Length: 183
Image 1: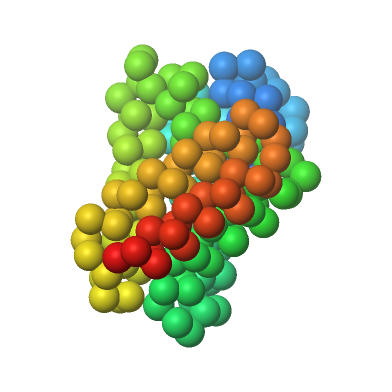
Image 2: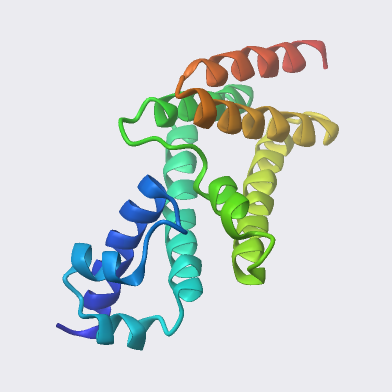
């Protein structure tokens, strides 16, 4: 098995296990078993578990933000694109394997002890906030709405992760719609 294939198999297994069970409860031997990549090869690819966690978060970030943007871009109206963020969140929250925000969960587990993980989480959240800001700008709305809409989305993620409900997305969407109406 070449390095690229082994890396992809390891990351696929890591994502499923880390997201599903939590980072600290998953060992490298669990990743080995789920990926079919030998332990020796795993440690060649990721000399420390922290590096595997970092790679998992990077990989998930690219896919998560890409899926969000593709969904939002289906809307032609710039203000509807902002609301579509919350519609996408509601669909995500409804997925069978939804366990909350991977970055918030990772930060809760390791953020205080791992600079690499904290940096990944902060980078993801900054990119998401910037994306919301780009939608606000494209809609010709005041920049102050960026932080407000970002916090609505983040609050919905935390609440949905805890409650296991899609309702926080609908509630956040309604609050966002209200903010857009009074601008």
